[in-house]
Image 1 (cartoon, rainbow, N blue to C red):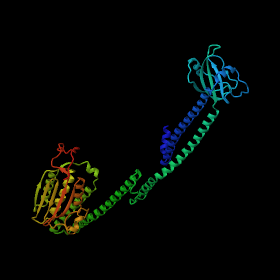
Image 2 (image 1 turned 180 degrees about the vertical axis):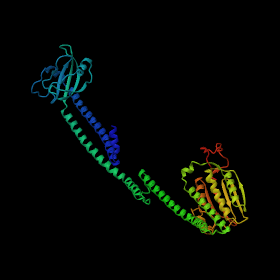
Image 3 (image 1 turned 120 degrees about the vertical axis):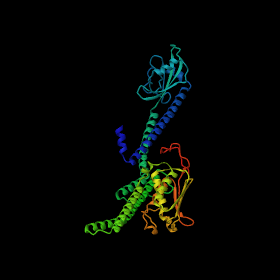
Image 4 (image 1 turned 135 degrees about the vertical axis):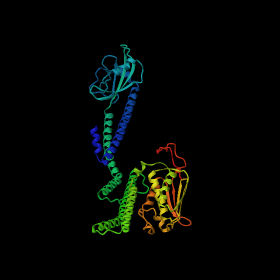
Length: 489
């Protein structure tokens, strides 16, 4: 049985569906056919039983039988009932047969039990055989006591079952043929339905094979808008998956291209400075001390820029799963204060004011701090000497406002794009990835970030994060509680 099941599982899905449909139809047809055969058999036997009961009620049947019965019927009977068997039986001895009977019916113990019951029963029906082995339907009725010998007597009436059995056999043959045709038709219909139903799966398979062979992610499977079956859902999921993969590949290629472009400039400058220093050492003509210090300072700045760019690229390339393992409940106020300390070191000539209220969010601590540092770095970078940067945190809304030149309206839609830098800021240090990291970190924390021109000049950055003013009870140890739900800010 296990081998059969394993062999069945290796068949194509169309063949399996066709076989299952044929098996289901065969079972249903067999059940209906058998039920029909037994119903017809019961109806035919009821009709035969009615005929026997009518024979038993004929006037003079019993008296004539007792007067004329003999132990052996004549060779050429005239058919007392036309085509019937008529005989009388006692508890012992051979039956007494009517001269016009077709033959003798074989007596069984159940027939003699009618005599032993000694009651005028309605009669007992059974199937039996005559002395020639022909099938008959027998009715046994208790008559009473024979006045000659004082023994009980029963009347047996029987009719041949040849016609009834012939009808049943023909019915069984017809049902068998109809069942066979039905099973074959069901198998063919099941195969046709399987082919039609699995045609979208064939298209899906061809699409997957095409993607695997050519790496072409632009292929799509047509799906009707109103289709809601499993195959349609699978096709939509495949289309969505290929779209996401294509978009991811485009972003990856764009990231590689942009990263290569951004790395080329500091690497070229770094190589030029290193070549100047090397040539000076090789020719024995040392550079002036001031020029040498300037070159070394430039090399150091370029190395710092490369390190920052590589760190930003690593941050952008981190997967969602790696981030999810480090998410915990974080105090946004404490994180902002840590970012403010770093910002004050980078802009000692600026005045940075802060008004921070308690607020707790779900985020990765290091990524959240890096995002806030990037926002403050932008504010410090574009603030004039002696300027002011205002930082405020209230009910989950963090605003950072500088008083610099501001961002032109036509550049605002691009500020969060990777490697995008304002033409007016290309001379300033930076990789163009800082705000991209901010947007990604805030979105992963369930919030949103905007950048817009401030009234009176400058730029205001707004970060909204869902959370709560108080932490959950188990957040003190950096746990990730499951019963604390942040509220929208």
